[in-house]
Image (tube, rainbow, N blue to C red):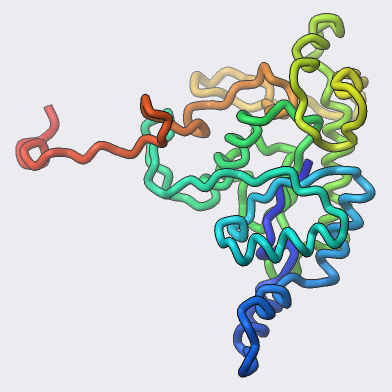
Length: 273
C-alpha cells in the first residue's frame, strides 16, 4: 500500500510555477489542474504500482479540493491504479494525547496516515511517498515506511527504486517478533486485513511469516526513561504495536477532535492556581 502525495511527487515545483506563471488567456482551471500532473512522473508511478502490485491511499492536499481530487482520480484510473481511500484532514490547533497542540503540517500528515492505519489496518505493507520531511515528526514509526522526494524533481527513478527496497525490507519484517510462535501470530492477523501490497486470496496468505535476513541490523532507540527499546517498525502491519500519545489525537466524548481550552480572563490576570 502506498500513501500518495501529489505536489512534489507527481509534479515539480518548477513545472507548476512555470505553468501557472504563464497561464494563457482562455485556459480553464480544469486544463491548468490536468497539466499540473506531470505525465512522465505519473507514468513512472503507475509502473511502480504495477511492479509492486500495490494499492493507493491519497494523503495529498489534492484530496481536499473536489475538482483537484476528481481530476487526480481520473488520471490514476486511466493508468489502472487502484485507489482504495484517503486520509482524514486534521485542522491545525487540535490536541494530541500528550496535551500538545498540532502546529505542524508535517506532523499533521503523519498523524493522518497513522490514524488511517489504526482505523483500517492491519495492512500487508505500507510506504509513504511525500516531499515533506515526515521522519523528523514520526521518527521510528516511519522507519522504512517513507520515501522523501525532492520537490524540484518529483518522483525519480532512484525514488521508485527506494520504494521497492522499502517494500522488500518490510516483506521480511512481516513475521512476528522473534520469540513468538507462528501459531500464536496467525489468529491475530486472520481477523480483518485491508487490501495492500501483494494481497491476494485469504488473510492467511498475508499472515505467512518469512525469515528476517541475518544481515539486517536491529535498530533501537531510547524511550522517555532512557531505556533501550526496539523501533516499532511494524505499526499498521502488526496490530500489537501501539502509538505514543504524541502521535495520537485526543477526542472528546462525542468523537470530535479535542481543541485546547481557553483560559478565563481571571486566570490570565491572577495566574494559574
